[in-house]
Length: 259
Length: 269
Image (cartoon, rainbow over all chains, first blue to last red):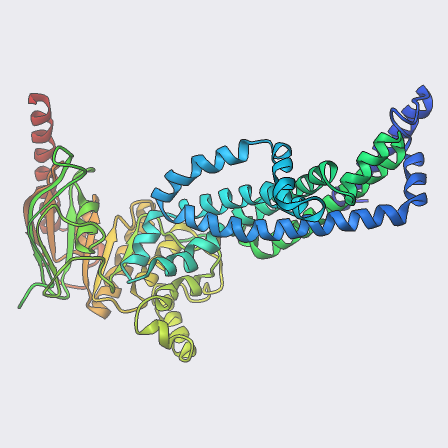
């Protein structure tokens, strides 16, 4: 196996090694299942309850993606708004940071008060956690457009909308996609938190229920499924990113000499 | 003939009344199709002068007229190029060159239907600066000199009447720079636009310009005007002739004196 293949295989090798180590530790030291279940026990729990787990996982996935979609829409619009004007930037940025620094778990009870339990607060929490990095990154991308380039365009009679379309948005794409990878994982966190606090469905609910009954292998099975969903969505956006913003990475760095 | 660009008593102060005076009572006139250069020590407000003429910055006092009309907001037809080529990394060289056509009227409305015609025009322009065959390269695949050539093409693709250049060759090595002087001279001779070149390189100014304005250190004032009546096309060999060397030397002395005066005033205050 050459180096390139090894590089691709590395993440899987690490996971396999970790699972083997985990299994070995649990068996060697006789760790009790309600402290840390062995991977085999988790797998057994998953197989036994797979239908219920998958139902709950689907519920969580739908909440996450819905909240995330709203987060993208709001985050992009807010980012454009903030990034296009220094005045708006100065006015809104501190407020945004303030809102973002409030622990979202603390907001869920308020959301429950407003929206009831189940799906609505889960979507709202996923949205609240995911829109911020998107807005900040889009704003940063727009705010760092070279002033010379703006001068070039303005002296051609470009409207602010022209500048946004021709330079601002394309330039912001690498920032935007970087933020999506962060935001999607945060959206999962948000949905699961809300389900833990106020829901009768979803992975969060499943975790809480199995914890209260000391069914720790089931808990871990839920955790694994959530992690798998997180990795899968992350991977989708990573692929999208390299497709859309390949120009920003310059992998085939060949230069031509001469003036 | 009426000057194409006219400055009358133009001053520029940054900030409020106590702010830095960047330019002080600048008078200048540039004829249509003339190549003008502005030289001076760094921080003399050369770049500010450019922003004033293109209307990107309002003057504190004085009047600026371009093509007979007072400049009130950003002009809509000017070509510009800077030290930094500012090519868009997500576009290839051809698409970068054609960017102004997507913005300037009436081209922006004609571009879709007459695409072939415009592409041919852009390829021709790129070929004239020696970039034939590089149309589909991304900017970062080009050397600094080539990027600057592409930047010049972008500034000229919509056939502007006025080209503004702010130290366009300052970041290039000496040989590439001299090559590009010739490229720029050829473009100017073929298209006869009015050109204002801001530079600190005196040989560059004397090689390219018909008229050179020498500016003092901050606040920038025009301390001398030189007419260069060497025949065109000028060659690099001419830059070693006594007449050429004399002009460059004279400007060198004027700028040195202006710098000294500024130092003395600064020490006295």
